[in-house]
Image (cartoon, rainbow, N blue to C red; front, side):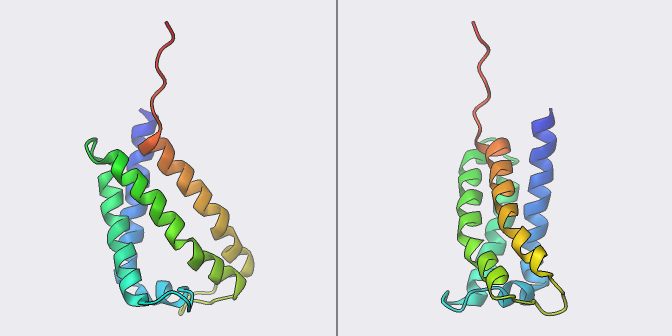
Length: 128
């Protein structure tokens, strides 16, 4: 039961975060490392991927695929979080402290563990 609650919470987190890519794209565009091409496309693609992944972990038939997709996405966006922290990037309209920018880095690991727990972990088999 607790896994179901946390699966729904994670789905909401990803769907809202994905929608935010379209509501406030300037935040995400600002933290894109210069070496990565096609900033606008990357922001839009990652937003769609977050929305679909969030919905996908709710559907048993797509849960594992969506879980792996969300893990890949979290790895893919990690350079933007590193860039934000190391280059002291300030997204427009938002003041992010250096501590806050650095805290985004371990947050990725927490999100990855959460995805694994609700979408990829195999339930324990009862002992015989």
